Length: 252
Image 1 (cartoon, helix red, strand yellow):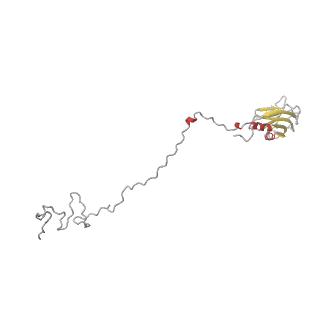
Image 2 (cartoon, rainbow, N blue to C red):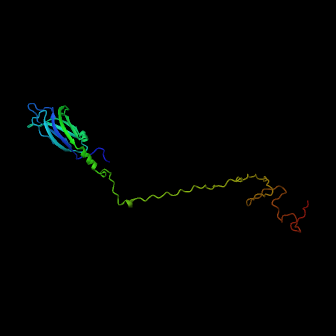
Image 3 (tube, rainbow, N blue to C red):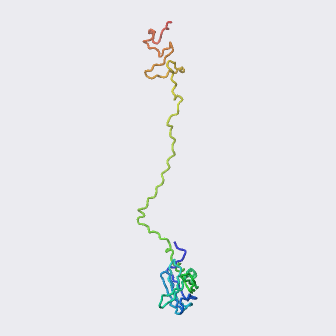
């Protein structure tokens, strides 16, 4: 994804250190000899020493600083050069680069402070930046440089690809109603009540014989004078008739 902020990586910032005013005086008996150091990333630049510059030295020196993405600030320090002892720290400040990177030009004086955050004078800087050149350089890049990289197709893509899914099977037919597991109850499903022993069976409808009895079970007793079933020919009280099927009337 392309960033909305233009890249300044490798672009050149032109810096001119013109001089200082109202510097804090670190000398008692003589005039101080100031110089300026500019720090940016791994770059460290130093002006010449302004001998006897006192509190208002003048330098008028130019520098070119290669810019780095993510760092938009200069660190400026002012020192007093000593011949015998160590150099004296006068003051420092941080200079933001937002204005010069946006408009291409910045001319201002920046206040200096001691390590105890006291005023130590000011330093004047003039900065130039080629905004148009940066835009042209950014616009000249092809869109392919900002397009997301796509992985190269694998030679095994065809062999490792899964087969296309088969269609779903047809829906099963609707369930058929199952036949009744048991037949409908009959009106005669309940057995008739058993008769006590010695009681005659209920009269049957005309022309309907008695139900067959299990093997070896006698028929229920019949009323007197009504033997059942009819006696055989050997037990009949009648003599054999001269004609088959004809019997004389029985004597009383």
